Structure formats: structure tokens, C-alpha cells
Length: 439
Image: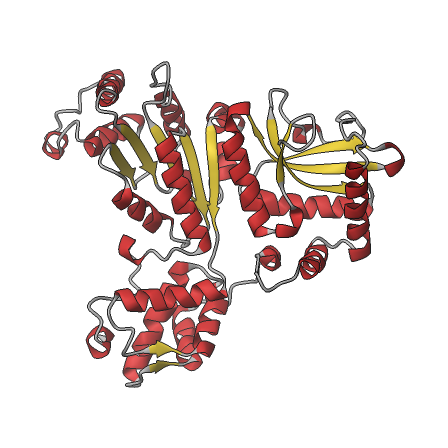
């Protein structure tokens, strides 16, 4: 209806995952780079999560368009598959079998082991071609446990030097909880890279709307006022799918009014029709980095978010820096102390971890640790604690994110950089599991 009126060549805010509409916000651009890096380095298992409507499927489609011709790909959009159906779908996408063969039922009587053997032979055939294979599974939080176990077994297809198959899990935030189930521990330990897509901030939300209007060809004939864009972001919470819904209905309201400007009233009308309430402000929204915010202001915001007094927080940081400057050892770890949490200790075989922050023991720091833990886990990091004794300088809690093998230093560095980018005041850094910062 409104497309012709405004001169669009297509709907600018369609809900279909068209890769040309992917807006590379800081979070989406980072996710794209992480996936490209993982595929180039043949990292094995990769997990990308995000809230409903954050653009995960669109990201997958865009990634497939940019993968080079030496990489064969399979995109699984339906996770409700049996083990055999998953294998058939992978073979179909890889081009090993044809769609006509599948439709004719010629693979119906083939056993699971025969399907695995066929896949293995195909993957071995890629080696002399210097090619690789990637399976991307969308909505992975819905995968049945037997299928997840089958995928883990597929990861055993390898040569002496490299993995023959990479798997990218893409899913909602509860995918982390699924992978942490005890029966999936072997699979979870093989995941080398984890990334969480974030909602768009206000600036990115505005740019996202303008980007889609431009791609659809009608940016010059209609515009959203600044107040309307602010309202779109507030109501949607920066979720791209909700932005699309609101803007589509707001354009329809603009068309009905024969207007070339979309106003806040039109956005409110759209939200009412869609029955969308304003999204709650996320607790750690204050931790987003802004170049114009001074470091002191970031410390104040962090202290407020963690419910820790500014004076206490500054004292803790001053004390830690003083201890480090004097060369006092922090290696006296006390995992068996009464207040330590055994389930949060680093696994015995851990070589590297990310030191996120340290807090002096006390009631306030306990709250700070809990707040920081909640945020880190919501961002997809596994959190551990170390209790260290600094002698005259007291006892401290270390908050650690992730447990890595020695060869995963790059992955650990990437995770540390993500934490630091989201909350610069934390100064997250890679350390060895039993010593100080990794040089």
C-alpha cells in the first residue's frame, strides 16, 4: 500500500531475513567478524546467541553470501529433526545427494552409519581441494539431546592435523543453559568461541531505520523525525524485529495521513495496534562504551550499577594497583575456604582464564560479585571465582570468565576484548590459571 506512495521498490521493514538489509551495528559487525574468523581458522564449534528478534537468521544469511567458494555450507533452519534427517539435510546442502533423490525416498532405507560414512568420504575428498565444510544450525536451542550428541560425534571426523567439519550453533539466550546440562558437558567443552548479539543502542537504532529506508529506495520521500526515532527505540528496546514492526505500521499511518514525515503520534498508534509495550531498560545499558564519557564517569556508573559505594570501589582498585606495583604475590588461592563456591572453581586442567575484576571481601563486594556474575552470564560467559589472600591488604574475590586451554589464547583474548568493550572500566585481561597477567 504505502510502498508505491513513497516510491519504495519493496517493503523496507519486512520480517524476512534478507541479507542485504543486514545493518552492521557494533555488535552485529563483531559477530560477523567472529564467524568469519572462526570459519577461516576452522575453530570447530562456535555458538552465537541473541534475544528473540535480534537478527540472528539475517546474520546467518549474510555470512553465507560472503563465504568463499572453497567452503561448502549447510544451513539448518529446522532444528526439530531426527539424527538421520539431520544427516540427510547436511548431505543435501553439501550437494552429495540431490533434492530429487531425497523426495523420491531413495535415502529412506539408508542407515545412520551409512549416512555418516558417506559424509566422512565427502569431507575427506575436500582435503586435496584445500576446501572446508561448515554446518550452521539456526534456532539451535530447540535441538533434541540425541541430535546434539550426534553433532558432537560428527565433530570427531578429523585428520591428524585438522577438523573436517565445523559447526555453528545459532540460537536464543537459553541455548547456553541447554549446552551446560551435565549430559552435554563433552560438547560444551569443545566450543571454542561464544558470542552474544546485543540489541541496538539509540544511535544504532536510528541508523538501522535509515539504512533500511535507503536500501528499499525511498529514503528521500519519507523520513522519521528525531522524536519518532527516539520513541521507536524506547518501545522496541533496540530489537530489530520490533523496530521493523513499528516502522512498518508507522509508515502505513503516514500513508493514511498522506504525510512525508513520520511523527511520534504515528509510532504510538503503531505500538497500540501491535499491542507492544515499551521495553524495559536493561540494567547494564549504562555499561555501553561511549567515547564522550570520561573514565571517572564510567566508574561512577559502574559503581551505581553494581550497588557498590564509589569510595569503596575506588579504594579496592587503588589497593589492588598498589599491591601489584609492589610486586606482592596474588597466588595464594583459597578454594576450600568456607565461603568459596566449589561449583565456581576453575576446572583443574585450565591453562588460561580472563580476570574480569577483583573485590575486597565484604557484604558490599559480595553484592558486586553477584551483579557482575549475572551480567557476565547473560552475555554468554561462564563465571568462576578465586579467593586470594594478600596478607596485610586483605582477602579478595577474583571474578573470572571462561576456562581455556593453552592453545585457545586467541579465543580468550577475544572474549576479554568483548568484556572490556562492553564495560571499559573493568579492564578485563587474560591471565594464566594460577598466576598473573599473560604477557
